[in-house]
Image 1: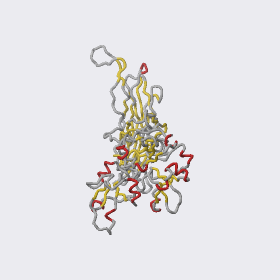
Image 2 (image 1 turned 45 degrees about the vertical axis):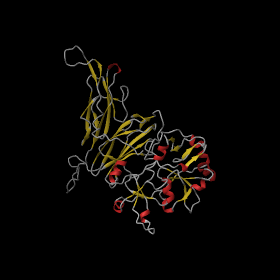
Image 3 (image 1 turned 30 degrees about the horizontal axis):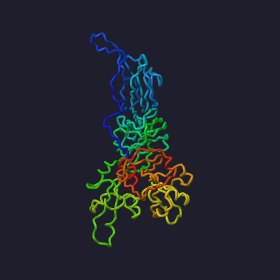
Length: 484
């Protein structure tokens, strides 16, 4: 589904969440009980974590500890790793200090993180014969800034775990944020959520995508979605595998300008919601066509037209779900790009080019089918009956992917395909790296899949893909996002 993120309201910049203290020995309560010992607790930072307009000198104290170990590079210290605290830590630029207290007998406290954001404004220098240059007012800088705080590198998380994504921002014009995750050291980015409320914190469940090269990115944006400032984790962090199906990351679909379903519905006029099919009332005049056009309402809060019936029926089996709205309501919804044929359904071509393509999800990626032998493996003996022509004007809405040939199909299969074995009723949806089963026919229908596009074959390529997570109901990444 479209990334579901539970928003954590409140400030998470100051330190990690408070935890109950442990103890070593016995506790001295201050009453004459004869009981004594040391409370085990994380170090205390002074000054407290937060945003400052000048460099800071940070001290760490832990009463009763034998030592304090810390790091500033994103790694998690232990009592045998990291730097041993000996004197105040100089914080001249934004950084996160991670620290723990160490006690006798190998006892250690929980780890605490202290995030410091340093915004040092440029002071005005004296100008010959003129005034000094303009600096920040009261130490505040108007230049937009975005800083990743957590995860900033060195952390280790288990796939599927909920983690805090923490960042800071400052400067004029910042309205919201877009959050991204990379599992290949920033080579490819997958959208987590956009727009995210620019309150500096989101709670998000990591994908079960094991890697030692994960990075978090935050783009701070203005009200139009223009990126004003951006930052990524200073160092990679690790995601370890959780027992169970692996997740595809980045997701198969990434569409610029999309919103959460809640935000998109709020932006639409009353009575209209995401995934609606809408049209104008009929004027009962067979000579007019304006009242027959059907539009899809997308997660970008726009209406999208279907260029022809073939494209419409690649998404829907009939017109039963079409709703009639007034001309005023329709006009109030911005017009978006036309809908293209659903990935994994029809093969496509243009009349001026003999090449035939398979369409994968993810910006409508075209994969050239090399020859007829390859087409038969993919689409059966009657593959040529499953080809539609695309208007050359709309062809620019696709992007070009790699060639598909017989050798490639022996070990893999294109994403977006629906496949099954001739002797088994179980249907599989193929993704970039897995094949996903459906819980039942309701889950199949919920995503508007159609049985006429299922290919029944014994090809080794799709069977070689590992089994992914089960599809249990409507997923935006399988339907609503693919429409855009």
